[in-house]
Picture 1 (cartoon, rainbow, N blue to C red):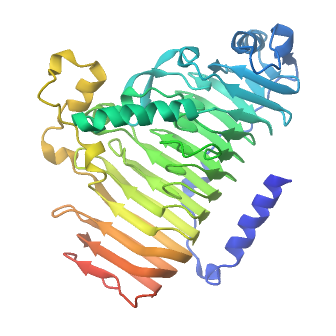
Picture 2: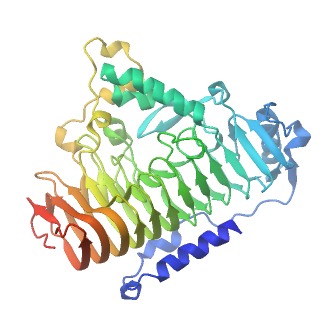
Picture 3: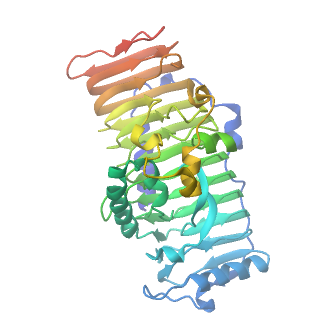
Length: 474
């Protein structure tokens, strides 16, 4: 019933847009091809309890649940289930042909011992490195699913506390740029190097790090997830759904309350991201709600492999820091292009359009303090310290962004846009924008914008301040 209410709310929110009928543009032709095909699984069931799993929050059921998954795969696939109850577990690995069913009366509870999450080769925040596996993983598999109306509880607070304590120690040393990579925290769900995957209907609580990461994968559907990461404090970097150098992905009917980017697209960071050079493309994000968090829809800051050919529509932001956020840094390279955003509703959002190429310098730029030697620091530190050459290769492009039918109330600032001299944000189109804001904001270093039917009602009677820009006229 809760999911139905969410869907009804979302539908009513967008029907309330008085100018919605003005939207005449068609979706790109590739849109119908995204997402997993309809998956069929054998009807045979494998009950993890028969392999030794116990509905006991002090008994570690990792091995037993994994044995059920492995037996299911060996038998040609099917459904893995658990009897009602709460199960303590470390990393699980779902295999090809297997549907892990988490029923409404089942809760997977993540171990708070990092040793229960084996190190794997993966990518974190744009850089390939060894990192703990997620709580539930689908890695190098095909035709697999995690479904059901149950709960995956990351119990992340112990990992949040670890991060804050490490950051407190690292920052005075000039190491803000590396602490996120040294503070190893488990993701909740990881889909990596896989194809034809479905994540559907379950609820995620208290992610230790990112909630869902789709990495190096194709034809993935994320449908109807509810994510609540702020139930026991504000977990740092607890993103909602991250699509990372993946393609043909569908994300829909989700409701996310987190403490970082709610729906985010990524494609690698700096030298290592440019080395991998793999885009995120052909992605549809639709019919979703973002509550607390850093961005209703965020592009970046990892842009090295390019983020392109994205459609995001019918999205609602309720108290989210940013509405549309496009961010990168001077060493990222790549960029964001060919983006279609339409039918957005924002309520109590801080900035409607937050766009910049020099995001968070203390995190984005790495410099080794004098007391450290390059040859003695860990390999992932060395990767972060490798310079992008020539330096111009690190300048990202933001271009060909199309935004239509946006309504917002209770917004602090409409625009906070900053391109660069010699690298403007260019060829943006804004159509049918109606915002009630405290202040209009500013646009600098922009070029060739098309603005149609823009209504910005600012409490301070300000107008959008446009500087150092060409053909941008509000």
